[in-house]
Length: 578
Ligand code: PEP
Ligand code: MG
Image (cartoon, rainbow, N blue to C red; front, side, top):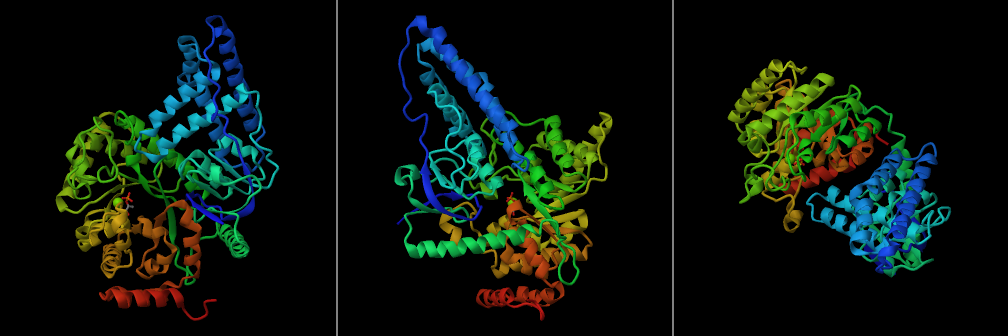
């Protein structure tokens, strides 16, 4: 039995025989051609490109009803890459310039482009290099006379490959699962596997070399584990886990349209966090009540120049329109610490101790020109639907003063330019610094709402760098100090009559749902995958019972006793709870 691990992208457990796929680009036939053959070689390449174009178009055409909504979009991305002069055009030029055969020219150009993506910091953009490689692989197959599907898609097997393009994945209609050596959770293949609801593990490294056709394989897409040639005990164990997982997911799916109301009738707002405008549709489809956190800094990262006011406005409007009347909370940029701009684009954030340096609102206030453009863009987007503006890492009263001055200036600019905007745009603060949590009442009174960023609040309270794996075991969301700060912030906001939400990772952790409800929280914002699991906790909860229990727990400062009380809270429940 061999156990391999990678990045799981969900979908549960698959058990089946392996089907190992060949890589078209592995043995690229390389030869120099005669000048007299240039035209014929270019024609071969053009024909292969046209064939792939036709294959992709046929795949789009033939998408069955009920195919994942991402499918057509992903195929179109590949068609665009194919058309991009930087790929096929440059390959054609290499045939002339270097007298390379078509395969050599295509693989060299794809490798060159993929290498440019490879050095980018952002994992999502790095994955786009895989898309280029996948398109080139398809052209290579066509050049080798191997057009059409990569595998017989009617086989109920676990596909094992170095890489699988989304277009190929779509033809593997009966796949039980995918074990892939390259890529990560943000690759398009991962996105597609997730929306096909097929378990997949990516980034396995060398699974293709260690698994053979017809080997028995267990693939756990939740844990990111692949077990090759399992023992009969492992098989029996995973069979029962698989059956439990299937029952669990079906039950959760049935909750999609169910209102999130506790047993004692308390309505809870469940919203989602997004990083890119194209994720907004997921919010609309997931049954979420809105976007509780749009991390706008991702519009600014990994690019050669900052987005201007108009570009930002378009991006924010796209989200607002996709939400069709549901609220969108746009956070101003949180640049600094682990989120940096490309060098040369704008003055860098502090580097000595970046998490404690000129990050988030501190960065924005130090660059008023950049901040004003963003404020104007958000004010304009708010004229298109319900928008709230959220400011990260507030800790000082003068930061609120400066924010208000700049907002007034942004409104004046828009009036002078005769632009439509919402003058009553609600303004909120993220509570993620212990100082702000302890003075939450002040910020609640000065602003329209609060949102607790628990991930940073835990980092700063416990002095644990959230991205340093060496101190990760000390990162404890249930430390009494953290609980006191979160509960105190919720209480302060309620006393000031202001809405308060949690948008940090804790909101999506279903182990914390009862605790947060007991603190009086009624607004949660989280990654979409956690929404239904959290909703189930809400449906089973009784907030009156929880509030009595939790108010006692959060008064405690003995970590051992608090942990024991939380354990009892998780096990117990009000009378009559089945
Ligand atoms: C947080 O800190 O909890 C939060 C939501 O902000 P981010 O994760 O973007 O820092
Ligand atoms: Mg934060």
